[in-house]
Amino acid sequence: MLNVPSQSFPAPRSQQRVAAGGRSKVPLKQGRSLMDWIRLTKSGKDLTGLKGRLIEVTEEELKKHNKKDDCWICIRGFVYNVSPYMEYHPGGEDELMRAAGSDGTELFDQVHRWVNYESMLKECLVGRMAVKPAVLKDYREEEKKVLNGMLPKSQVTDTLAKEGPNYPSYDWFQTDSLVTIAIYTKQKDINLDSIIVDRQDDSFRAETIIKDCLYLIHIGLSREVQEDFSVRVIESVGKIEIVLKKKENTSWNFLGHPLENHHSLIPRKDTGLYYRKCQLISKEDVTHDTRLFCLMLPPSTHLQVPIGQHVYLKLSITGTEIVKPYTPVSGSLFSEFKEPVLPNNKYIYFLIKIYPTGLFTPELDRLQIGDFVSMSSPEGTFKISEFQELEDLFLLAAGTGFTPMVKILNYALTDIPTLRKVKLMFFNKTEDDIIWRSQLEKLAFKDKRLDVEFVLSAPTSEWNGKQGHISPALLSEFLKRNLDKSRVLVCICGPVPFTEQGIRLLHDLNFSKNEIHSFTA
Ligand code: FAD
Ligand code: NAP
Image: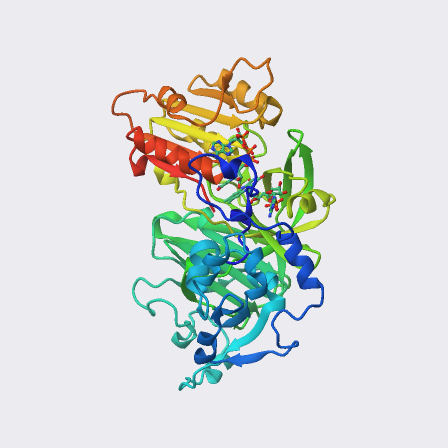
């Protein structure tokens, strides 16, 4: 609801926004962009009306502030006066007013959980919600305990079902030189994509994705370990082993002490995004405005971005943290797909279009090789199981909406034995905008299962290929199944109105919900 970069984009007056059938967007007034908001927050103006004081807010008090010119909203226990922000909210004032005088956390999470409202709204912070007195259990004695294998039950934070036969657990064991942390997920569909490990100084953090939840191991290690470690998954029993190398070959008496949310199973929608600093390794021009960025993960991180998922990149822009989603790609269309990717694969590639008047991308473009950018853990709804026994794969991409298609193409052409045909229809304005055109042409030449069609909306007179926008005529001709009843999947990604229109057309052409995957934030 607050600061919705994805909704401020495309720009209010851009073609993407005004195209027929597009979702109605709220045009912002002149001087009300995200950058203008950042300037206002830096101006020293008192945006809360409290002259810098922070107060405790009761529910009764919160309810009173429910008008446009006096609007308080609570997000995760913190109360913000969002009245000054109203005109800057890309989703519009009415959207923001839905949470006026109340707890807007759920609404916020539904729309854009990833937006870093703490930074965006820090000058609007009124204070915290007053906590109702409650009888609190005294955990202090438990906290004094150190970890030595299985945790005491009371360390499990009050999130999902308590310990039980299906609750994940962990254990640890050691040799002279190694410490192994074993996680028992009690699930079978676990692979190297399911586990993300970050170690910083003595803090050890392992997130395991178990269905719609995260199981978190979060420990302050009792002794020093070396930077690198290995991760192994024993799929048949759903066990994960993380092998740390001791700095000194001495016996550890205990593993460490529990840190926040240790040994808890939390619904993914309720977890904040965890960021680690990645180094810019290379940057290469792909078109006149799109570049291939290569980021390197820290040596003490294990993270693989699953096919079709995105991450968030975070930069501090004039002191405010700005976050935008990006979809990792392979280094090229000819990268062999490796499954599972080697755990020491540290490089993550992005194809990113630089908008000269955009907020985030010019700043990203200014980074020098060796500079750092924060990257979140992956998110997204695409599941590789959607490819099961697939025969026909259709990809509809517009502009940088091509990015999720890159790994999909790599994977489909290497790892789906039943696949007969892959067809990509790639919409761009001009020939110069086509990302990896020659790679696509070479790949289609090399692999006869792949057909690629480019469609241009603003071609030069020399263009003799297809022209126009996504339309019933273009799609009905393109989306021919190989066999009458072949198992088919259509993936679609691009500007929001393009995707929405595409989905409507696909339904008109009798593609079922299960046969369509659309990529959005
Ligand atoms: P913005 O500041 O959002 O501006 C974009 C354009 O709109 C600019 O031309 C700007 O001038 C104009 N504009 C913005 N606000 C206004 C206003 N108020 N009035 C007039 N004009 C305005 N992009 C990629 O390049 N690669 C990817 O892999 C990728 N993956 C994505 C994955 C997901 C899930 C999603 C949702 C988006 C993805 N994007 C990707 C898009 C990306 O997240 C950003 O939206 C994009 O990079 C633009 O960011 P920006 O801050 O530079 O531009
Ligand atoms: P672009 O170059 O502006 O547009 C690409 C093509 O799409 C052009 O031919 C354009 O036609 C057409 N198009 C634009 N809006 C349309 C509409 N409403 N109906 C039909 N056709 C339309 O695109 P871009 O700047 O690269 O932007 C790519 C978009 O993809 C961004 O919005 C980005 O957020 C999104 N994206 C999403 C994901 C994801 O969700 N996972 C991943 C990557 C990118 P015109 O010439 O008429 O504009």
